[in-house]
Amino acid sequence: MPPAPKHIRRRFRFGVWAVLAFVTAISLPLGWIAIERYQSRYELGVVERLRMNDGGVVYGTLNESWDYYGREPDDWWHRLLVNVLGKRILACELNDQTISDDDLSLLAAFSNLQAIWATNCTLGDLARLKSLKKLKVLCLVESPIREVRPLAAFEELQFLMLYDFKGTQEEIDILQTALPNCKIDYTFAR
Image (cartoon, rainbow, N blue to C red; front, side, top):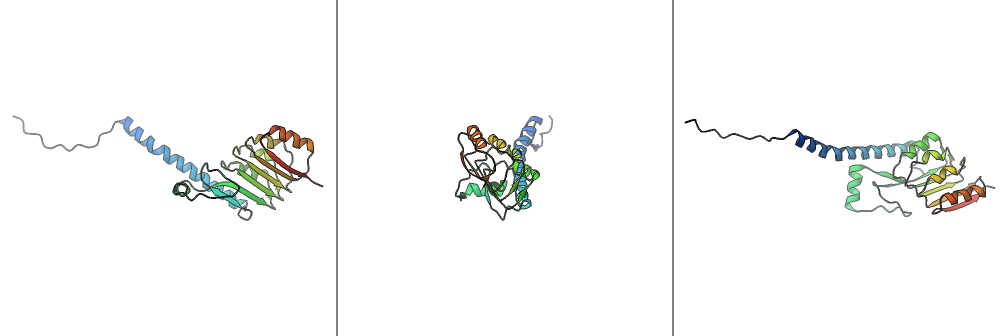
């Protein structure tokens, strides 16, 4: 009679597919978090480069809605999102600056940017901002722009302010036709 088998210690056994599924389930959320943290660091770096801290910046979290009052929710999950994913720029104010085409391209990468105020700024080509799909408010006060046609690309735009506008009434009418849900407030330059 053969001797009784000794107690065999079993090790965890996984198939190749189980390990692949486990690694995928862990790496996808971690990769998404890494991308969001990179975007947050990028936006904060652009704010520093353009010195928007002097003008003003409204911070928020991923996919947060911005309102005119700039209220920041004090919920625990908003704080958790900020700690894990980083701050996002929801609105920015630019004062007395020259904003080049390259600087506008930097702003165009702000995926959550919903409002821009530009006071006494020299702006580059606004067509570079066409990727800002969430832009709702654009205020250009004493900020000459080359042409208004690129503004028609902002389909979500709800309020457009053009003070000291150097264009014509015809351009405003064309823009209003292209953006029927947008309130356009304007004054012409004297």
